[in-house]
Image (cartoon, rainbow, N blue to C red; front, side, top):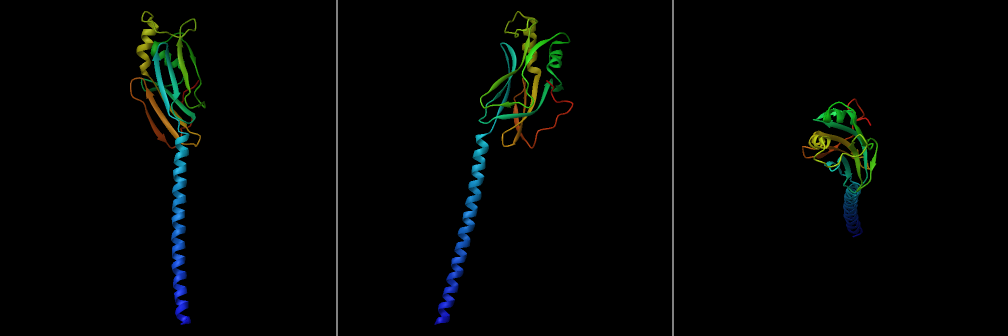
Length: 193
């Protein structure tokens, strides 16, 4: 009888151990899933979304952060006709031809754009350093209004968590943003300001 009781107790102990192990494994799974969901929520809370745009009144190029987190700009390539250019003077030479060109700019490299922030990154100007405003009788405005669609950009940026994206935008094609493992290091085609 004592032997029967010991066998029953041992069987119950094994059963309790199996249940405890199962509950522990379930708790571990729930904990792991909760951590995964929290990570996704944090990612969504700091997700930047950049938008490159151009306008004609006055002629200008802008960059906006439409996301909910700051965008840390790591690498910029500006292109005219899908060919990289080194600076804004080269852009204007390709759009208007060689000559003396005036413009104002905002630096992009290593800049942080806050959520909801929009900056004017480039504004062509006339000889008196005034923006080239909407004026169909002004031949410079007419030419720039047509040619501004040839300008595009590739901007690699990251969130505060270090996740990277590359925005590819041009005036004549729809823009696209893709996830990037990491931003490229500066090279001979990196835009200089």
